[in-house]
Image (cartoon, rainbow, N blue to C red; front, side, top):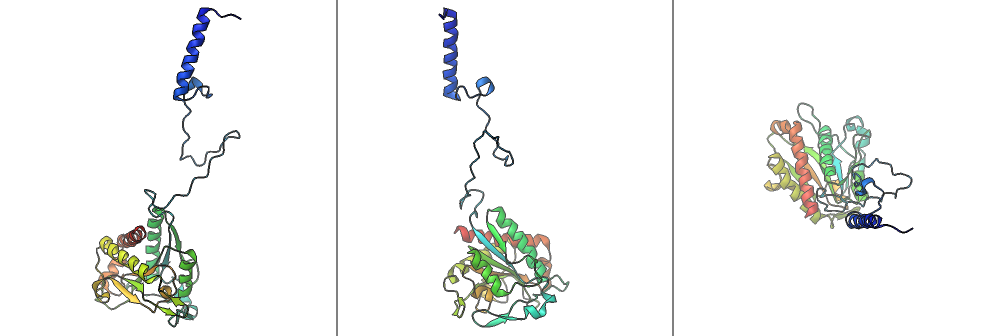
Length: 292
């Protein structure tokens, strides 16, 4: 039917408004008032899409180096020294295993302070703190054990755990049992070994770099000095008699956080706040090594 001039002007106004809306947010979007629908809440991971909505895409894996998650994509194995149950299983842990340069006990009970704070309890506590710090930076973290077995694992199994995970770094957490007056921390790094099942040629260099980074950050975080009884003040000790190092195919070090048999060191090791600092120092060292 023919339109009068008032109807034509109204239609023209509607078309003009629609064109303007299209330029801004799309016309005919179905939302009341022609406004742009609100963006979905990215944090609402539990929202269920309607039957007619397009399925959400699977989020891409966070790449290494993403701001805020500097260790994303990295795998780190933490090896808590000894096991709280080892003392109940002396026969099993005394069984000898091949460490490449010879044969050695499967595991040991570890040491303790005069107040009976055991090395096994210490290493688990620091390992848990270290795990949490590393996971917060995006790393995948595995423990060789979590006091979830009667004893062990044996030292050769501990090495295999890191190897199987193809870890970017492995840290075995310990405390020393030296004489009174011997104080400070040290980091044990692998010697060059090529004997039997052991061949450390490919990991000697990277492991030393890892050890140097941890030693530097450990001293800074805890305020403690490198051991005054070995390592020449460097905080590093090279050994070829540890199966956990000899049998590793990935960069690995042992961190002896202090001497449980010295009263002053024992007081530090027994303090939860200091243990958090120790975990922070190790985590910072690992982070520096992996980002280097």
